[in-house]
Length: 411
Image (cartoon, rainbow, N blue to C red; front, side, top):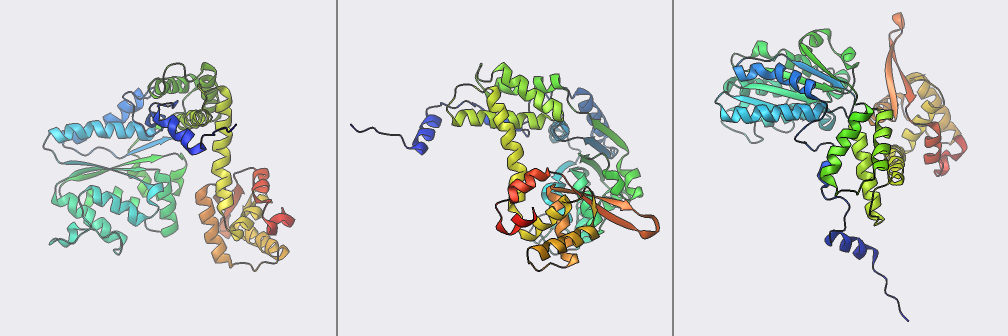
């Protein structure tokens, strides 16, 4: 007697086609989704709107700094305020341009300025007016900025530049020595018509320490701080999304409570709560179960944490792994000490060490991924040094690296 087994791919595709999916609206479970009502953020919405009101009265708003930890709704609120202003702008004749970019995603100063230039209408093709086009590479930073100023002046535009994750821009400025923020905050002194206002959004309250004092005074004319959500607020936010994303009764109350508690207890981060819920629902869906339970939430939490850090650790080439191990062997360690420990590890596994200059570059690259964290320490007459520490658990590093033959003797 023969039994027919359904191909695993067909089983999943059949389930999806027949509508046997737990999630009826996936977009709602992504943090970037814009709900009609942003819960528990009325005061912040009012403050940001008030600071931008002058633009509708044909005058320049103050520059604005918006702070708050990840997942506190900063970007959502700003995008909502901007889209509402944009609607009114389209109905009027006053030339206003709202431009948004994320410094972490752009990764270079040139890319960031080109992103703003494109949103102002600077094309990538040559025109009769040399200053009305912007190539994707090849100009100096100051020339790119001159062209942005030119288009604002020529079209008499009142522009608002939003730089999300502006703390990454502060790092780029430190590394390159090219202070784009200084140019942006001084732009109005160069404009004969039009204006430029800057809204900076940051997850890091201390990032101003890395800026030129002249920039700080101009940049933070107004400030809005987003506090962390508390547990009942996270639960309400999740509840509102569950209502739209699932049929009734799919997410158990116990799962909702655990998901809210995990995100509320750890960070007050609504983004993490939504990620947990989405991954838990996907796990339940793959297992063809009919509800999302507490067990699915726990499995999702493990998967999210593990994935992020383990994938990053595994992806490093050998010498980056050696640097991570060098930093792991101390609670906090200077660049020179890292290099010295790294050289010893190279000797232990019979590898030729790289130059100190290359190692310093590699440390910056690893730092950008968040696996290590560095801070500048002032040493009086001895100048400054950078001290590094590892941000993941040593056990995770050892477990991830243990399969690598070359590293087994030094773990």
